[in-house]
Image (cartoon, rainbow, N blue to C red; front, side):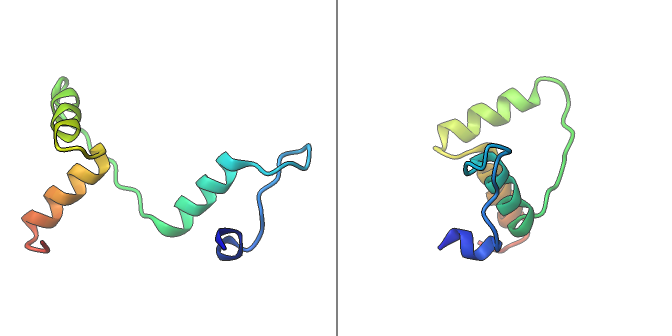
Length: 72
């Protein structure tokens, strides 16, 4: 179960399950973050290319990196 992987269920002050806190905690434990800067206007071009490929921007960039590194 997902809650077992994280150890505890994030709760809001009201005691209810906090989905955003859960997702943030999951991402922090399972992913590294990389920030890139691109020239103005290039983000839109990348976003359109990713959408045309049926991928998120993150998936699109990760696939491009893997291809460049010979991992695919």
